[in-house]
Length: 301
Image 1 (cartoon, rainbow, N blue to C red):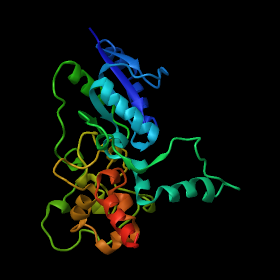
Image 2 (spheres, one colour):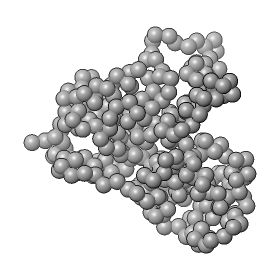
Image 3 (cartoon, rainbow, N blue to C red):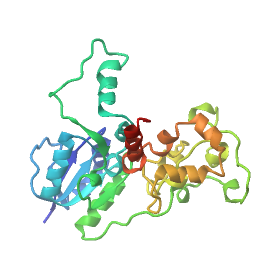
């Protein structure tokens, strides 16, 4: 008998559902063991009782919150699919601002807006803070990635159907990266490079040499493996969408610590937005929002 599955979309780009479709012909193998009874793809509104519930996207408004709570009641097992669901993702960057500031910027102050007005009552209310799914309901399993690899989705679902526990990754992305990193393994006091470059600033990036040794910021040391280093293989530095390793409490703090003996701190702060680099995908599950709240109460933020 097939395992019943329901999927739901919260706040995000819908790319994680597209990743599920990207299984292509392998979807035929999957639907032999599962039955998707509810999904935005088949436009089923109600959430029936199912064995596995899959949620993609973060929880940013009242409708997101209500759907997540419903999934928790109706699904025996809940899976958070994608970086937004697991850590808050890109939408979580709004946690640096108050809700009214976000609405004013979007509906009144944007460059293309004339005589703008903030809609009241027509849209679901924004929550004070964007949250990952597990911050609102209990989540049994997580599949990170922006978007997750289709193979990861299939492997996790098949594993659950067979009654086994999905295995998590523990090492950082550098263990999957095949680039040469000779200087990083040599103990030294001086910086490996005195310059910090944005990815687009260099005319050429050596596709065989470690990004950090070329002065290009890469989140590999603070990001868990499991994506197959797909961006790095395309000669693009890791941006951290898989989230931190299990032993890292803060992904942003982890990368700053990792870069301390590689890149000059002054150059790092001058060249890049440190919060935007270290917490691009994980701000809602970090300590930063709480610090902002304290600063606001003191009138400093």
